[in-house]
Length: 532
Image (tube, rainbow, N blue to C red; front, side, top):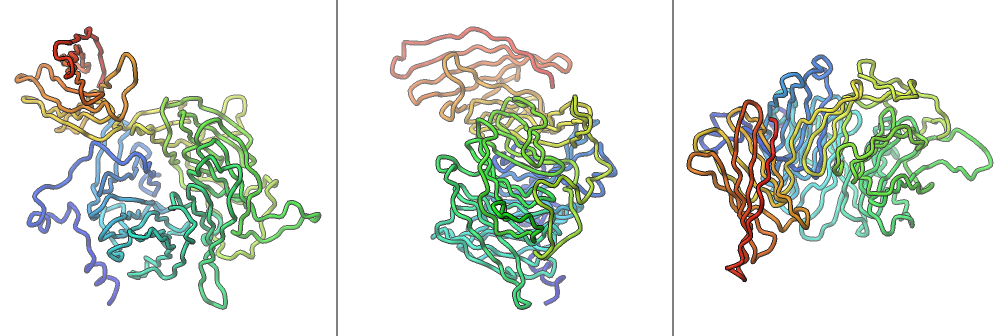
């Protein structure tokens, strides 16, 4: 069976296939007002994005579909391509370093692994997994020729590593290896930008290294477990990253610590240039911050985002360069650069010597078309623009060249618990489990206003969900009901006044305790105004 026949056989219908979808699917997904914010997002960097820097492409997941979102910086408009082909929620995704392809995978019964062409939003490779196996993590190799997956059986939870030669259309992993029973579920996969055969797997309690090696002309997946870091007993790992042009790996944790892994013997009396290997061992544990580090990346510099909303910039010896304190006021989930990763000439062997970690000599230069930002008082230090996502669902473009930021996506935290549509205008309102209401214009696909239920005694919690929303017959106001315990409900009324590009909200609350029906409390009016 040739490749074209195989792709046709496993073709996944998309929204462009209107002839086939019309017969099988009564509704087509055109837009998504929410996304899986715990997975973060990936910026798509390719030739198209380099030519048109006014448009920003990114990818994220929303339940069982993938979304290629294109944001126009000038018009503030967003266009979406919906990638439909999974029966289960997408569990992992990745974008190739050249920005041509992306891969999505799900974890459940009838799981699939799909590689998509970004330009057209069409699937070019699809692999079906066994009925009781799902994918928990997937990653492109640095040269995009292979896929590395971590799959797990649904009944026992046993994990296995798969190396897929997807460009040849192989329907099964070309090579595989088992992870030990003591290994926690894999949370994150990191690739080495200077060695396409080096990988690092992050679990909650341990770090595992994988080397795609050749022994007697046969490809072998060598798994190395360096053991536990005693400093991380009370904390959990979140992500790991290879330091570009260095031989070290950094693993961030919820305790604000970073474990440094290295294969160089610094206790040796002789200083030699030894071949770099992926058999890392713990070198040291460094206390960087006083809260959880959720994400860590390395391109020109090392960047971290933590639970307080701080962004730290470090050099490759972990010397702090710059600090944006509580930059977004919420937990940072992901950071993605607008420029491609610094990548040297591909080296697929472990026999190539590299310089010691203390060497500051660069082997390759960064992209010459990137916008740079000179840090105050240190003009020789330059950073590129980046996009970050937060724990409440916001997506923010940080234009460091202009020392400015743009909010691309509004908050959308919590699960949707209720919704309603305006009786006369194209407005729709969603209520969430965290007490947030978002209003959109569903015709123009435009966000209008956000309102968060505030409590005089406690902030919104998971139990203070909005149970019902209704507009008045003419749509001049709407009321909603929220509950912070089963026997107490609060009825709130919002008067919606629109003037130009400003919306005014006038609210009043009414609390009813079912245990004491006669006890009714009426809250004071609160006036708010919001731009849209």
